[in-house]
Length: 186
Image 1 (cartoon, rainbow, N blue to C red):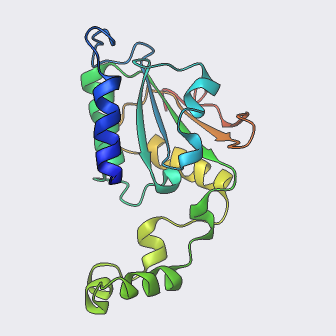
Image 2: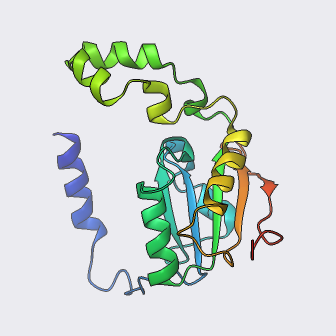
């Protein structure tokens, strides 16, 4: 049985009539969270914050990084969340021991080449692989950088507080990196 078969088989027992009441597309807590895709955060970060299904819009990518600060998917998601779905606050959440803080561009390039990606394609599209994936050295500094990018983005309204937190994937604790209330109304 393949992994996909297992997932689909489980889904048959998971979905039963009236198991899940319909929810609004808009988050109940008017909150968007931008965080990392790290598997250690799944079913851990939201409960650690008191967030449940339907409370917040969750946006994830590798290392909660912003590579394209003007037109990228994170900005697009936040624009829709704020203007169309009623989000009133944004929290950027990095985490300790993030894998993106140890990405080596040359090692990644070698792995891509070994899997059959042509060198000229990597060079043409991604001259600096570490920069393209959004690698960074320190998770806390990355949170500060991303909050700064969001605060100065001309597409995001000035009255939306943008906070920064650092999460511990071992014990679930949150550390305040930056409070956005003082900056709302930039």
